[in-house]
Amino acid sequence: MSVSAQEVDFSFGAHAFLDYENASIDDVEVLDDTKLRLLRLDLNATYGGLKFKSSTDVHGDDINIRDLFIEFGDQITVRAGNFKVMNGLEQQSSLYSTTFMEGNSVSKINGFSRAAGVALYGQVGDFLISGGVFGPDANVIDESDMYSASGRIAWYTQPFDEDSILHLGASFRYRDSNGSGLLSYGQRAFGKSGPKTIGTAKVGDSDMFFGLEAAYLNDGFFAQAEYGTAEVDCDPGLCPSDPHEDAWYIDVGYVWGGHRVYKNGLFKRTAIDSPVNSGGPGAFALAARYDVADLSDSGVIGGTQETAILGLTWYANKYVRLMANFSHSDFEDSPAYGDGDAETFLLRAQLELY
Image 1: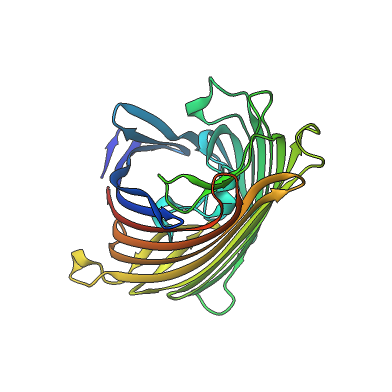
Image 2 (image 1 turned 45 degrees about the vertical axis):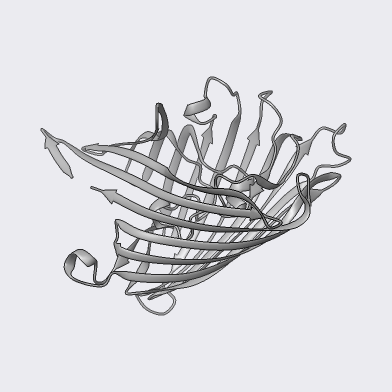
């Protein structure tokens, strides 16, 4: 809902994810739980050309800042506060539009999320350009002196008709722990509450990430892929040479009764042709993903993992959806489990109020 006080426009929102997670590693159940995964409250405001956005997660007695920023500008937008770093396609896109319940390995092993900083966003023709400098996340700002710089360029076109979109992009990030502790890299078997199946020790003073991304949409069909590599500045006493931590994924899917929405280089909530609240059946989506992470290089043995994921989603409307994900992972040289496999089954009920 929205209200207006003088010339200030406010909007409020609430988001809830109720998740069921079941995971096994080498046929041993390690997770079987139902919980409120997310309860997020939004407050947004605009005043002339100035915009304010805040998103806060509530977990019992804990309150965590997610977005908390102001932005202004026309040709070039300036944003200052706590917000998503500009790395990757899926990581920056709306959490409420993701195809699968858990994020890809490119984002997860590199810890892409939000941080406190200042960034610029602009567009030249069909090219979207952004860059920023950051400190740590606002929730750990008293515990870390880490700093980073990120940049991204994305290009899009409509190769066939107005229902088709081709997106290509690239991004980088330099990150320095600045004496706040060494960096490590890891990934789970696609269950948020499960243990990490692959992961390195703390080895990096700093790292340099470079990533590529691509997506194609045509009516209900979609395909999406990302690749990322991070060169780690490792102490010679820990590594004979600087290791690379690599990951990539590719997925394809189809939405019956709707289509994914692309805007300004990112994905937004899926559009539904005939939502339930208008007397329709909603929409259904079926998608598959193949995800690979390699954390073993130059004497650092973090393990490798290959995962196949199948996802089914029913959309009642753009604000309500039910999701089911099944994944199978094969891993090697895991510091915790050696060689083996893992399976997860996830369910989610997502509800948003505006």
